[in-house]
Image 1 (cartoon, helix red, strand yellow):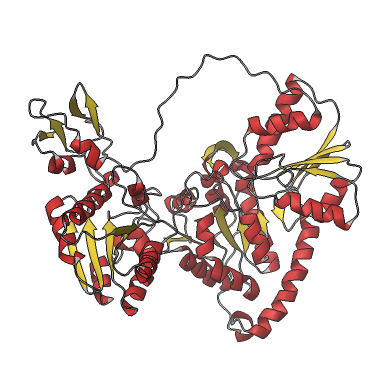
Image 2: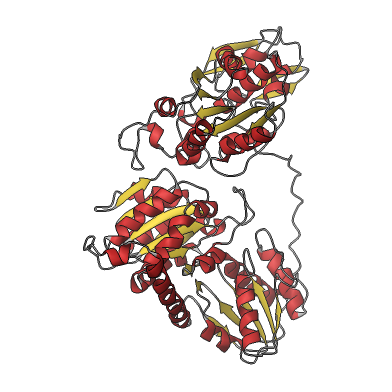
Length: 607
């Protein structure tokens, strides 16, 4: 059917549609977000797509679809799998009828995550098969294999692309669609779908048996490939396999590799032991390249020990490879040169690149979160109480409020934890002024529980809900408060103000984030009160507004005091020739700097 230039995430989505997926759910999280978005854009007949309120809900909805015989796919990032772990652990014991693939996109680096996590380890813990593609083409075809495996064994499987596979682009061969499956519907059977201890015990034994059968089957799986011969062996998987092949090609072309070697690619788990034993035969030394954890390496070491083989293994465990962060072609090439005792190919002499200034992530110019943080900070300074204040943050754009000059995020743990961490701090230091900041999408994801807990246990905290009308950090996806579905169709709009009111908080004040005086007044009204007080600061994300106006600086009035820069840290502000200047391309005309300027030098102009 021809080739198409696709991002890895697009390839996964199209591969799932080719495989006959009927239900796709998920929660946005980089690097996985484009998978569900691509499915939604395809408008495929008979395919239901939704952004769920969190990963747990997404997985449970997909489980219901799979109970009914449909092929279902769930998308999330690696930390989202933590949220979905409760239903996943039980679901593997209960089983499914249709195929179910859980895409958990790992983020080595990490590039945009709280943690580095290896979903292969989670698969072993949950006793679930894992598929690990090495490039967009393989991701496109492998997703169908994952569905087939899930249906054959009646259990969910994990699909683990990493950031460079998700966001890498390649020419992908588009294949004809596979045979369409018609879900048979849900069949009542209390002995199968209702998890009880006796059922869990019986199914645990079946799971262990299935894992052994999968290991034998994966030894014949084409994606778990074995090539070459010799006394040395190289083992890899995922995107590291692509890096390793490129590094080997460079070494062979530039310096030559002095001896033959075996190359073993591991792309699916449980570990293919029979194929691994075939690989190990006749080897003296092995190098393992993988991200993130030494999963392949540990499996090989166990196998070598069990069969009393005399094979030396190099990798992460002996320090040959780094135990954190992404691999690179250059790093693997250097390790390979030592492994084969050859010189690293000489690098091409290029003109030196210019030294670029460091660019730490910052809130966008015109971001309502900057205005909200600034209002709280100024109000606390101006309050009569002069109490110690602790600011608990959360996951989202507003985590960047920790940067100078705002310095307004003292803690950040995981989705929704800002509200509950603030409660814990307040229990130890009851005289502390505890603020918890949470965004609108995170509020729906896991913030409501924390508010209920605070009210129920009579906590004494101030919760600041930052509503910018979108899921901004992951690309502007809709959430229940936007009134739009994943397909951008109108739906019931969840009212944050109404929801919080119903929870029984002691006080709830709504304010415009960009109205500095009103926002500060709202903070001052609740600072010295008791109970769970909630401030709802509203202001549109800059990604969703038209920049029809901006501010400019009257050079005659500007004194060069730089207070606007020092207090707000807005990236649209700069200092030039002893005066502040405004970058017209960045400015949105939000007016925060004008509220700070003591000289009144900021003037509103039309674009």
